[in-house]
Image: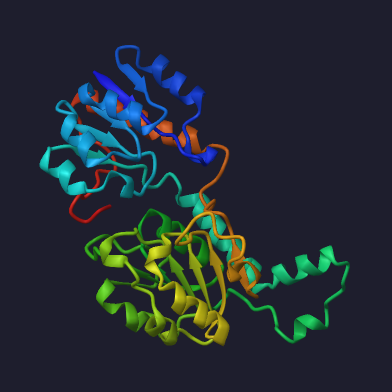
Length: 327
């Protein structure tokens, strides 16, 4: 069996370390691993591999790979493997690393909400300026998460872990997800389908986006949806920037309809240094790092290794992607 490993990005955290590739070679001596460091070498190597461990393939690469039967993405998202229809046509099974990022992203979300709700962004600024702002905080009171109503759009592995932590803070959680036939999550008060999104945005204090970036979610949150939220509601986006109408979000922040936002994803990354979001009050910006933690590649490699063993034994794989749905 021959496996192509091509996981290289300008962002260090998203590029597989040499040590993890070496560990795979030791763990699977019967498999020939081929590593590519750029798209050109990947395109040359893919023509005679049985499987790929990569987040990106072109349609031309898929067509040229006559032996290819399985692709595993090191991320949960599979946008880099588009068009998925080409993979489906050629009978290629796709799995992803869904769940690996769930806990770190959920902790990141709760951290951002605490910053915004407890006004820690103001107190940290005051600390750097050596100012005691006790009285100033009574003009824009810190608020509790306890008792607030959270709507999570995308109640998958990440959304579920966010809900678990929000419930522990005493929040009332509603989840929005495509499939409604799954068992009810005990720490979620209500689960609805996308058709009921507008209904559950009413009387919502915190809107969290953790849905996949696919055609059905593109710009699903716009001016109308922001208007339904309680005035001063908080927005958290750890999904994809394309889910939100950027102009509508900025307008809602400017009018006070949105009381704050924690944004980890943007239409163009890195965010332009001159972008007004950098200096917009009550906006917490993080550089698409919500899933970062030291053990990331240990977890990704462990999941891929488990699937590789399953593949060798002819067993069902974990995290099979629905190529029609896109996730």
